[in-house]
Length: 358
Length: 151
Image (cartoon, rainbow over all chains, first blue to last red; front, side, top):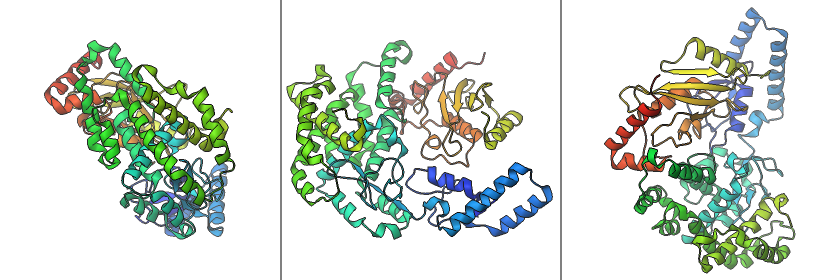
């Protein structure tokens, strides 16, 4: 430790290490590693401790490597201090990823640029609420599904928070403290779609799969389960399934009436149909709101409007049925599933342009 | 391996020289980020007298990222699924670089002592735990004898 900094809660860390932690920590709040106190203000140099360390170093001596490292650490700190970029700007230049109501794309609340990863590619603001998990492959699915839940929930309450959110987040975000974002998010029921999404996602993950692994491996474990009936003495009573869903129901009341009603009387394996139903609602609302939103929305989405029709046709004819697991669905469901697929593909186009093979 | 952080070396040394009672963690010869772990079931718990094998892996970003821990021994526990994955806050959201391998393993041991069926990972186990706790505990004990008994 060559550049000791002290947090507001009184714990001392090496400047480099603490910066790394604050940058890599993807929770909604910056916290002290030792006591988890939320950090509102940037930690400051503990010069008393540094003097002490210098004395110790003078007495003990350092080998060349460490001397070099020490020099680097101190220079780095000085540079950051002079450029006012201490702690990689996590205490200043932060924004919130807001999911656009219109296309399901996460955007930076500072500049409305599409966000991929933890940092806005346009204004290089750090996303305070963007979970790293979204960058993994399986999360195309998670992103799409949960944003549907999310939007359905928002709609069911008659809220149109998202446009408002992005409006208010125009310019004054720069000056706001990150903690105030976090605070608003915790207390406002519909603070940010992404935040809700994260919360729902966290709950889903905890209660359904409980890990960052996707549903697939979770289902694998269920399959596994059947293979080892003797070991687990699993009951085959269909009612058995009601309980996990009721547990979920209890835990997820914040999801709103739509989620609740649709999860009733359904077992885990019918989760697909639940999604489909939600998707349909989502689809309908997208269709209803699209002209109006599209008109007032001046975020640049080059060519998206023009390509939309041929695109959805394309998916309807080429890939729509591929998503349906035929046996359990009647025609209406297939229709829904196709629309679901269309909705997904359309949104993925914008989220991940590169993934689309047209 | 050439650039194994000092912190990992120190932690490993301490794990060997001053092991936590009831817990062993031995680094793999070829990959010093991979540990073979045994955890004894806590006394007064259904896992008493059991010795559970786990694996622990330190990702590249450790200690900024939590270690990956998984049960290798089968265990009947509401927060551990049949792939051995563990539902434990400090391994996920509540990770902090101030935690260490030893503290994580202690947390895992504590999880064995206090299963939390209200925040389940293995839904069927949790259900059983909530509905018929005696039965579930008996089963956990049975599994411990079957799969985790000391040789």
